[in-house]
Image 1 (cartoon, rainbow, N blue to C red):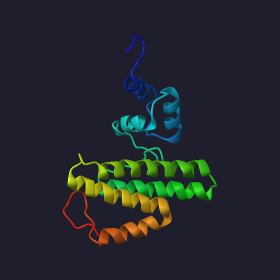
Image 2: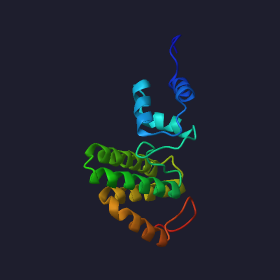
Image 3: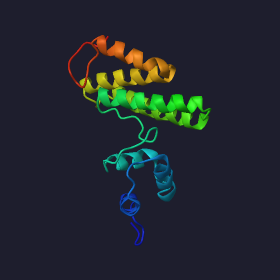
Length: 163
């Protein structure tokens, strides 16, 4: 790194020490994207998650380490998406969809990657299905996921037959 150039991590740390945000709001998110450009949203999101600060949706994105995280993320995004559509805020609604599409693509990649453990592949394929349902009809997702959980789908690595 050239002298005088701070890493993205260092710049973020400096920003957080100076601004002391209580949470990652839309204003903080946009300010950080501007200040840290050309940082990728996914890298910034990862760094911010590591701070432990509360994170507003849709900027928190989709968490998919566990089925519980995935469900909560998709439900939270549904609230933002529904509100955005009601307010005719198409940009915000599209942003929500883009977050789910990107997460679905990551899950599908892991679900089809031969280097991923077989149990993890099945889990990621199931998670991709959840996100596809959300993308096809977000309003149906809450009822669908409840029915899916009752059907005996695997939860967080527990052995179960995929329906």
